[in-house]
Length: 541
Image (cartoon, rainbow, N blue to C red; front, side, top):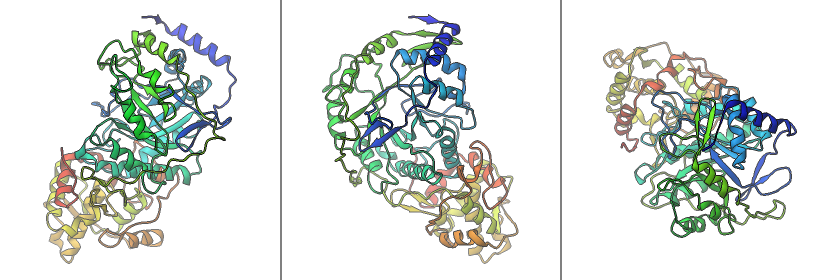
C-alpha cells in the first residue's frame, strides 16, 4: 500500500497539466458498433474507472439523506486523483450523479488535459431523481433533471456520453419500467438535437440477469432509432477469481453482441468474491476474442467503500493505493486492443427485432409521452375543481384511490400502462396536476354539482380560464378526456422551461408553482393505489 499527501498529488497533477498543451480533447464519435476519435478516425477503447465516492453500484441508487457528492464539482479532489487515474492508464471515468447547478469547468478541463473522458449518468440518488423500477414514471421533474445535466456537461468535448438509466429493470417482474427509460432515451436524444448541441450518445447500463438480458438488449436497440440507445453498457461480475473466458460466460455474451448495431462495453466489472482481485478478465476483454465486439470497459471502482470494490482508500487529502490498484495496473498495462480505422470500417449490423416473449412486459411502441410542462400548465389553468393546497401525502393517496374508483373513464387521462402501450396525455404531469385533472373529470361528469368538488376537503373550486393560442392547440390534441396524443414538443428553451433541476418551477403557461411542489410528497404506495384503481397495470413489489 502506498500513501501520498495532497502536496505530492497536487504537484504531480500540476506538472502533468503544465506539460500538456491546453486544448480540447477530440470528441468521441460513433459509427456502427464502434467508438472513434473524431480527429483522426482511430478506434477508441475505454480503459475506464467508476469514479464517485459514497455511491453504491450494482443498481443501488438511493441516498438515505437525499444528498450525493458530485466528484466533478471539486477541483481539488480531481487534482488529487488524476495522477492515480493516469497511473492506471485511465481514459474514461463513469460518474453516477452530476449536480447540474455546480461548476465543473476546472475538473473537466483537468481531466481533458489528462486525456480522460466522462460517461455521466443522468439520474440522481435522491427522491424523484431517477426512474423507479417498482413504480416507473417519466415526468416533468425527471425531464428537467435529465436535460439540466445535459446542459451542464454537453459543452465539454471530453463528455463521451450519458446513461439514461442504470439497472432499472433487473428482473422479469419489472420489465415494464424499461418503456419509461426508453422514453427518457428518446427525449434526451431529441433535446440534444433540438438545442443544436454537440452530438453526444445516450445509452443505458444493464445488469447481467439471465432471464431478461437478451430481451433487454433487444428492446433498447429495436424499432425507431430516434428512440433507441446509442450505446449499451453492461454491468457484469461473472469473472471471479481464477475464471476463464468460457467459465465466466464471456464467450456467450460476446457471441450475443457480435451482431449488435451500436457500441457495447462493460459499464461495470470486477468481481470481488475472491480477494484481492486479480483482474484476469482484462486480457480477455481487450484481446482478440472480445475486442472486435466490445469497446473496453469501466472497472468498479476507484474509491474504497463498505462494499470492498475500491482501488484506493481516501482519507481527507491522503490517497492510499490498495492491492487491487497494483493488480489492475499490471493487467491494464498489458491491454493493447487491435482496432479498425473509421474510414475503412463499413458497419453491417442491423438493429434487433423487438422482444415478443411472454416474459417481457413493455410494449416497444408507443412509449410514454414526452414530458411537457406547458401542456400540464395549460390543462391546470382550465380546471374548475382542483386539489386543495393543504393536502399531505396520505390525503393524496386516499383521494386518488377514491376518485379513480368511481369509474375508469375518470382517470383514463393519467393512465400509464406499459404492457398495453396505453398512456394518457397527462400521465407525465406531476401529482397535483394529475389529481386535479381527475377531480375535475369527476366534477364534470356530475354536471358540475357543487358537492361533487369536495371529497372531504381534498378538492376545491377555482376560476377556470379559457385556453387560447398554443394552449388551445395542445389541449385539443390531448382531448377532453386526456386520452389523445400530443405531437408538440416541449417549449420554453433549454431544460423544458429553463428551470433549475432541483427547484419547483412554473409551467410555461404561468400557473401557480404550488402545482409542481407536491410531486415529491406522494409515496410509491399511493401511486400504486392509483395505478391499480385506474387500470394502469403496474406491478408492485
